[in-house]
Amino acid sequence: MSTTTSEADAARQQLGSEFAGELIGPDDAAYEEARQVYNAMIDRRPALIARCATPDAVAKVVAFARDRDVPLAVRGGGHNGAGLGTVDDGIVIDLSLLRDIEVDPEARTARVGGGCTWGEVDAATGEQRLATPSGIISTTGVGGLTLGGGLGHLTRKFGLAIDNLLEAEMVLASGERVTASADEHPDLYWAIRGGGGNFGVVTSFLFRLHEVGTIIGGPTFWAIEQSAEVLAAYRDFILNAPRELNGFFAFTTVPPAPPFPEELHMRKVCGVVWCYVGDEEDAAKAMAPLLDALPEPLMHGVQPMPHAALQGAFDELYPKGDQWYWRADFVNEIPDEAVEIHAKFGAEMPTMQSTMHLYPIDGAAHDLASSDTAWSYRDANWGAVFAGVDRDPANVGKIGDWSRGYHEALHPYSAGGAYVNMMMDEGQERVRAAYRDNYDRLARIKATYDPGNLFRINQNIEPAVA
Ligand SMILES: Cc1cc2nc3c(=O)[nH]c(=O)nc-3n(C[C@H](O)[C@H](O)[C@H](O)COP(=O)(O)OP(=O)(O)OC[C@H]3O[C@@H](n4cnc5c(N)ncnc54)[C@H](O)[C@@H]3O)c2cc1C
Image 1 (cartoon, rainbow, N blue to C red):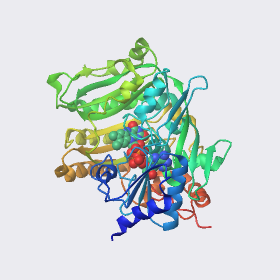
Image 2: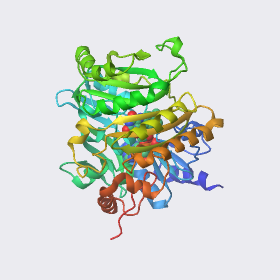
Image 3: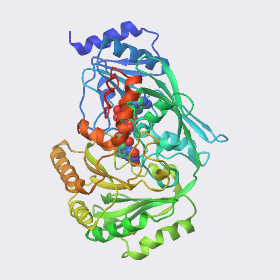
Image 4: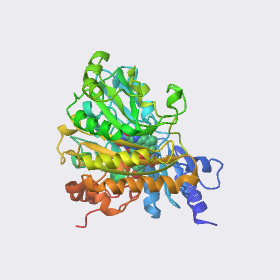
């Protein structure tokens, strides 16, 4: 009998028929579908996938994995590029059954299950014309995105996702259930705001909500040949723009579908994807200094829309099952030499879905100091991501080469470390570089809450040795 089968059988025996959830092993019909994660390059075969329907069920599986000393992965939305929501021959705690969402419009909070995706949260909060900062794609998991930091359309106005996290209900490596907040386990609360899944399983998050109804959003595209001029102007513009205006710079290929005009289909472009929290007239005023300084764009697709609609705008372009290889870095400045490198690699995007984004992280994200939460790059101005993406596995080499080459060429101009949520498996030095001065404190907190490093399928913080 293989080890993989025995893990599932042992779980069934030990956790029993009363187990709240589903236990899926390699011999079960549901296994093939259940083992898949978003990045099709990741092809792992866990010994057991435990879909837990209650925090108590999570605690039982945590204890089971710990006692049997098998690798344990925790899966929220399964979007992680490096495939950290799954593991070969180990146990996956799949949180996809923990999807309750309670919005309290008076308190302006939302309590969100640890396995929710952002689209579900945005839909629920949007009904009350409220929102909390998240990312830019609605199928991403709340769990991984939040615990790593959370950069998105509302960053400049309302900060990172973690800046709006009020508390988290957690299952620790010991199996104990605790709340992490400013009042309870404040060290843990500090650590989970950027420190990823290193400290336990979050079964629910409590977020602060803001008044966000209709936003003014969409892309402005210019010809790829104008990249250097557009990026230089964007760089000088965005850091002085009002906080209501978020705009990330992007290289992309115009998808061959409406609402894009046919003459632009499959054309490589550079541009800015906007999100303005406020009315149309103020949005136009806020964008004007950039638009007036540049040549007429190929397309200015900015319009009023519900916040949730902007969040879902890229979903069709990036369905589950594509190959993803990405690299990232934080950036303080974009000197002219770096602008030229961007222009070169932008023009060489290897496939239709490959892209580069520069997410602004100034504005409200700068209101906190680097030591206020585990997320240490509060002084950086952008998070850059170089994402090679394609449906066809035959193109894995091509997308990886482009992404790595782009990153290596620009790394000397970076702030040194990268955003953990946009890293591949890049080794311990890169994890340390992501946390800089916060690393040692994280390692001490890890030693308190997870001394045996049970939660190690992540951008791992090794427990400090006493
Ligand atoms: C298409 C796409 C778009 C993206 N856009 C953005 C963006 O706009 N902004 C941004 O900041 N990031 C973005 N990301 C990156 C994203 O934040 C990370 O991939 C993140 O890890 C995804 O979280 P997940 O829960 O879906 O992933 P998973 O693969 O399920 O988990 C990732 C990691 O988080 C841990 N984890 C997840 N949930 C929990 C939980 N409840 N408790 C404890 N640990 C948990 C896992 O153990 C694992 O280590 C994007 C990713 C993709 C693929």
